[in-house]
Picture 1 (spheres, rainbow, N blue to C red):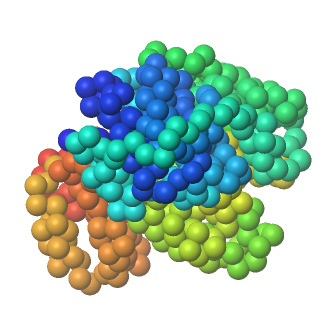
Picture 2 (cartoon, helix red, strand yellow):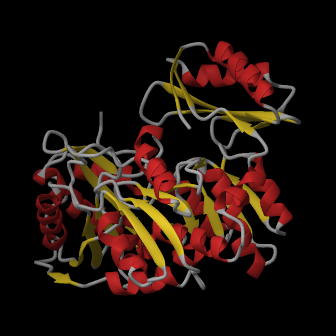
Length: 448
């Protein structure tokens, strides 16, 4: 399977991604972007420095300059790309993947992400064989600190934060480097830390907060300490997942619905983007706050492109990515944390009480089915549900008055992914089982 994915480059080191590949990718990125300066950062994985050296060798061999921002999170890389006026950026990370993986997240200027269609596919083509020939003499690597400016930028989203206690699970990943510095600026916030020690082997749990088993320690810690809420970050800290004061998981679409009014209060009629798997509560809450809600296909490059095109103020994705116009339209788990503290500070209610009215529908979570003919099955579902309101923005979403479902293809596996929601639990379970029969195939694990 290719290491050149839908949204990034990612593979096992060194079997799939090694120094030779990294050097060719460096040369290819410069050629594709016609870049003179590229921001390069990396997370705490064991292979990061070796890949950094090879990647920057390729970049500088094309005569381009590397702005080395050192150890950082992916949101810091996005920020530096936009703030420093670079021609693009490469973040060395494999996000939430296990320790043997590493990879590259690549952006154009102003933190505009590359997807396979908008550049990664071309980098794959350029990197084939010997890759682009070195050209333009030797560029240089210059070190520049981005941390201070990034923290100032993030803190602007917080407003006046009241005293509170927050449990933070960094998963031994890069959030353990950034969050202590960020929250040191808010001494009124007591931090209950979990797994802040940087360790790319991830000894406590995989840094993927979408899996419920990876949230168990955080939920337990919130209840033990009486924290106001808990937050867990993924490996490169662009995603964040939250639990309330009772230790209950807060689905990302409900958080989108909770945070959207923060932006719509100061910008009436603003646009909020949400992905095709999200609860109807998002549209309802956005419109209630006087905003315009627009549905997007799944994937951070698609979400950011649509948010930028529509000049939207905010966007949220079920995977835990939250996007902000005033952050170069990019995602940041840190900014999301600031906004949750802001919402809590402006209310006398606990977070569980603020979220409770948003739990008015019943969702299935994401269910995967092994299906060989994915396109054929989607067309069959369209015929079976022709009486519903059909949207083909990503796979097929069919809306009925009291329930809806979305079935879309996996980018990398022979899987169809089903999500559905209904007004009642009984209706959700009945329709879930009906659709499972219509899809056929072999069901996999059921996500949150």
